[in-house]
Length: 117
Image (cartoon, rainbow, N blue to C red; front, side):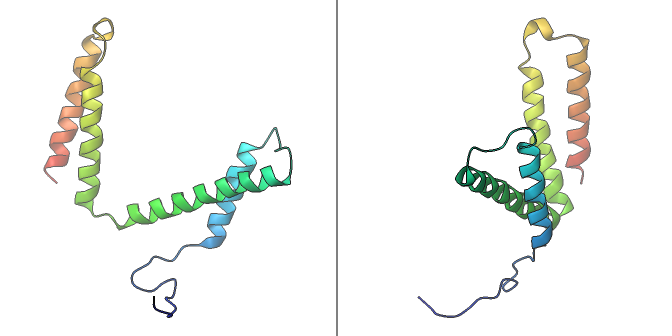
């Protein structure tokens, strides 16, 4: 194992606004515990730990989404629409109506439009 220090922004790692991440964690914590508080200090720490982890995951996901190209975003949307198309086709017969046909046509047209990108 090497004993060299790798800077946080080295080798293409994105920089994160740690103050914004901490503020987001506190926002989540306050939202979750608006009407009730954890029983003791250990429970509060554990709860805030989960909120902080969630804030970091959100920041990393947003950074990854920002790096995606237009084609990658279109491919992700086509995958989502394909799943939605399967959900439309799997609707119970009692709920199928003219609305199902319209929903299916809208999804198919959007997939066709995204496939051209």
